[in-house]
Image (cartoon, rainbow, N blue to C red; front, side, top):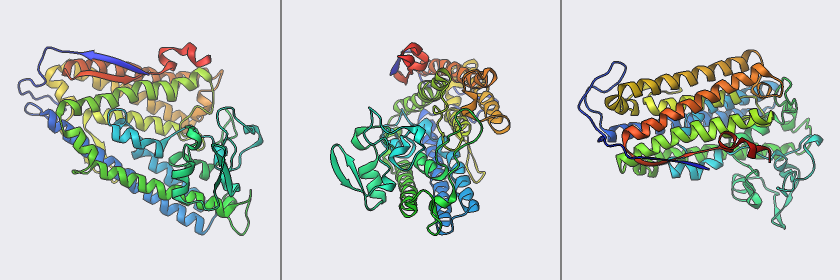
Length: 426
């Protein structure tokens, strides 16, 4: 659902030159330079996502070559490291169609994991919405898709991306991307709102001492998914290079570019993160309503989404190698027009980040995110709600920023969880 915001401010986009402490601008900021820096940071973030995906791929190779607790843990650690830069790219969604059209290949969730591999009996045996709910392609050389038998004897990147992903036009049939890999590394989290994440044994990949059968096909699936993740991120890196389609599109017109920046910030902040990823779980108290549900890494993914939103405003990004990027920013533009509004935006972004960091600290020291949203967990629920409240409040100021910059009609994503919570229970 969309929240349409129509603004026609009377002031022009640029004002007289001004300098403010804490801002990079010493003269009137050029909106085109702001958009150019936005695309430069996008390239850096996707390059970092690609680099960490390649490190994950290498760790998976090492694990498959010599399965053990240690090599499995190394692959898990590489997966978690890869989530940091990738989640900070999610602010490029919503406002950039090239990213939106691509994103479902790498970060779609939730997934019906029974499509891919064995599941616990409590998972069930069928779904009215998904004929492939327990297809278990790893255990079967043939799967039935849209009533037709499909050869699944060779598990390859081409097969899982071209045939299995969203098979039967069902969005829950997620066969590729971070979460398919996550499931294959961790397995199901069967702990409900109790402590613990997925606990897949390394022997699920040990050809000499195989557990749960089909270890060779499971290994082929994991490697195929990892190979695809690298190639998909290579594609997006190409899109954000100087001659890439995403960069050219966003830089074609400064007003269009600023619309992309603010659409991404507002939509991720409100409808996607505050609503679909967080408030829905608090309303339902459902431990399955967490983004990284197999690994219990949801707190970090939510935190890095919030970091990405702030980065799109300030123009600041710290790369995985420690390099700090700064440049002409949306904050500079807003400060030149209305210093008080810029201070308000920065303050609210900080409040949200503080709440997210408090949530992440609780996850690391007290209980995981799926426990926090459990029914009857007053303190845990309140910790998550504080982050939601911060996201909602900062979106109100994002709307004021849209108004101040006079960029026309902007559509932000909404969420029934926030706008019509009764619908969630129907």
